[in-house]
Each structure stands twice: as structure tokens, then as C-alpha cells.
Length: 352
Image (cartoon, helix red, strand yellow):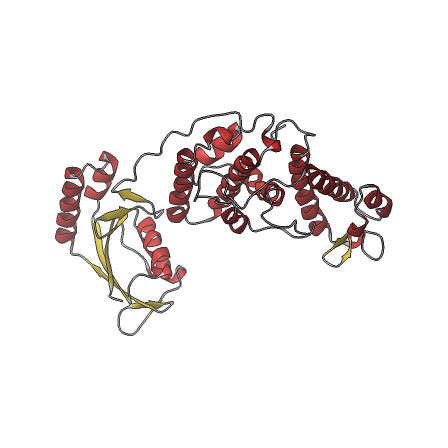
């Protein structure tokens, strides 16, 4: 693997503190070392820096870059060449936007220009296609494989959107755009309820904390919908799921129609599982000791009880669970119960 070379342009030079914060330390050879990489920074002389910035700005203008990008690059007064050996690596991917952000500028890699958030600003990505608005689900969707799959894909998209706010924007925003492009190409825009569509159309960095939380919890509804389609078995009440792995099994980001191995389970199976989930949700609405065994038996699910007659959570009765664990399991149960209510017709629309 050869060396990786790029150019940093900005208003101020990078500092040692920035490199150290990224996990690099200075070596006796004048380079910075970290995570198997050797990084050398070579500042340009002021006259050379100005000529480089103005020349790059002229090139960007000739190639149709946005006026804001052209102006920012042309105004750069600090230019630093960077050589990293042995070439591209995750540590370098994190370091470059950090340096560009500190310099209040950009990094040029080949002919691609990235900002301090790691977003490519030239060549600019193509505009997102329109994502038609719709009602979300419509009455009857829960009775068909296609309808449940479309709702599952809406859940998968929104569940993927929520956590993106905690990831580096340079990777998270292109992924958000990939999801939107796939939804548009698969004609799944109308399957999104208005708040779901709003969350997906909000650029990374601008989604409110309540919207992030609401989006992330969609993964538990996805758990139930995928089970209803026969893709997997239901996890225990104290087990949270990994939405990306589940979504992939349903064709998320890959197909526009339900994969042939999916089929909606029979109504009797849906109703039986819904009764059991209702019992779990009821138990988790009542902290402390309760007589759960009759509730589980009435739901046709006596197997929900542990040896002591209570719902087990991580090997102990729910009555003895730590408050944080109990609260998390209660939220999981509520989301799954909501999905089951839709599947058996207790909710005409998922968003009700």
C-alpha cells in the first residue's frame, strides 16, 4: 500500500493538541505516529500558500463548485501538505476532518474536497430525489406480507436515522442520503408517516434529541414486524436488538419488494404472540412484586414465568431488577406491544 497524500487549506495552522487528541504523538524523526501510521506535515511558505489557494479556487470555479466553497478556499492563507504511511486507514479518516475543522478550512484528497465535518463539498453529491409524502400505512396493510414489509422498511430507515447524530458527520450524512435515495427508488416514501419522513429528510446534525430517541426506538417495532414476516424468532423481553442486522435480513437498502423467503405468519400465531406481549407489557408497567403467574396463564403464555412465578429479567425476577434495567425493558415492551396491536387490528394505523 502506498503513501496517502493530501493538502489542508484553512485560516490557521494545525496544532499539536489536535494531533494528540486524535491519538498521535511526535516522534524523534519529526513525524507524528499513531495507530500504525506515520504522518508528516509540511507547511507551505506564505506566498506559496496564497498561490496554491488561489489556484485551487480558480480550478473549483471552472468546475462549477459552489460560490461559497470557491470563496472559502480562495481565502485560505495556510496550506499544509500531509503524507501518511502506509496510506489510507481509519485513523487517517478521523484525523483529516479534525485537522480541517481546527484550521477552519478544507482538505483536498485527489480532486475531491472535504470540509471540517468530513463531508465532500466538491464534486458536490447529486441532489436528493424527491421523497413523495404519504400517510404512512393505510388500513389493511397489516393483513398482507407486502404491507407489513413496507412498514418494516419504514421502521428500518427511521431506526437507522436516529443514531446517526452520534457518528462522524462525514460518514453519517452520506449514509442518510443513501437511505433517502433507496426509499425514493423503491417507492417507499408514501410508507413513511410525516414525522418519519421529516426525520429522514433532516440533515445529520440537525435532528432534535426527542426525535433522535423516537427514531431509535423504532428498532423494537422492527423486531416484531420481522418476526411476523417469519424472518427470525422474538428475542426475550430483556434483550435489545441490533437494527442493522435485522434490517439487512429483510432486504433493507437492497430490494424494492419483499424478498421471497418472507411470508406473514398465520393470524392465530400473531394473536397468540400479541397476547403474550400484552402480558409482558402489563408486568413491566408495575414495578415491584406482583402476582404475574395468573396474568401469563390468562394470556396463554405460562412459560413467561420463571421458577418464582415472575417475569425473569437477566436471570432474576422482574421485582428484583435494577430500576434502569426495568425501565429499559418497559420501553422495549411498549414498542413491541404497539407493533403487535397493529398486526392484529387493534390499531387501524400504526401511527395511532
